[in-house]
Length: 140
Image 1 (tube, rainbow, N blue to C red):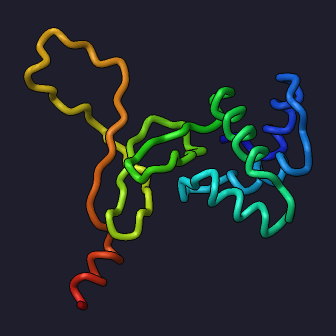
Image 2: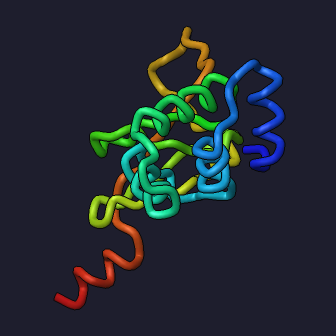
């Protein structure tokens, strides 16, 4: 995802309104690897700017996704997550704490049973437990 300053320029170039609320969201998303939900992003924004609406958060996330600045991902947690990392990657989700991590696969898997199938896109979600949750289970 581009810097908050570059996003401000991109929004204006696209004819979208740039407000202090949107600029705050740009800053909160920049270099954010936590894959936030709209609700968690709203909570973080409210701590800095009380009164920011959840609708503003959703609209800004929608606009950013439409511009290709972030991707919305479904990882089976019930809420869409938003990922400012738009490079080619997959995700791993901890079943214990719900954290989502980026996963990079260097070689495409061999797909058996799909002889006449041409893959155009794939979004793989690995499920399991992170090291911290595994350690908690081991100590109980």
